[in-house]
Length: 305
Image (cartoon, rainbow, N blue to C red; front, side):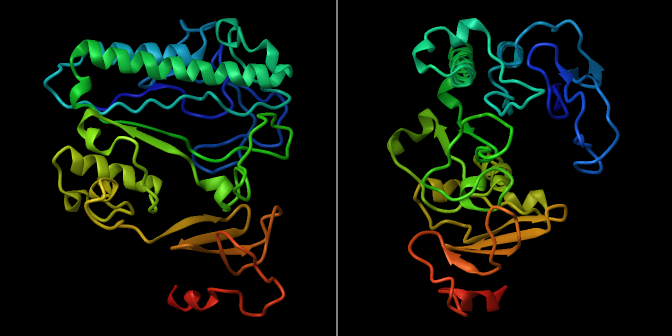
């Protein structure tokens, strides 16, 4: 049975585990999006029960310890799906600074900039977490039959008060934009079941909704059992045993930002003005674009949408 451990909202302090933002113009609301009344309080739960005994402990370490505990207590002969979603590394702002303990920032003094040192420490904490989960699976005798996927949720934030010092280069855009720099994230899949594919890469399209049917089918299920879903099973495509199962996907329909985007092969249609780039036309992912043309290269593809 699925069980939630951790935070449910956003802008959570890494040590006291409470919602921050003492004076924001808005606060993320689960039901209504980025609106709602100003609230604060603890946001760290086991199921529906708030946890107050972790105050002062770094959230990356707390989540890692819980993941290791779950692995150690799980019967090795039974399947386990473990979703470990860390808040770090993440952006900080004027009211929510970057946070990492000295044990992770130590050794990065030569980086110079204080915020860069802190960000490096957050990344090191994440690296330690991956190692501890890996080691726990190995000790439990589950590693040889495990598939570990490591990925992110979006690109970096570049031009606001949020000081994460990220870079999406050479991709265009950033977090909260439909450009590739905002939505294309690196991912790594590791497993002893994939030894024959060590060092290979997959250059097909893979959408976040594809994880569910891909892992479900890998575990022996049939994607048709999942009903009408957006994701597709990409496992055999990842193994280069069949062509990619996805050729297009909806990037986003943002009713608040008043823009939408869809990608088809190597072209993307962006409709609306997102502030950091506009033009509701098709454009290739690389190469030069003649914006003075009344019919951009690839525009004929839009007739099929």
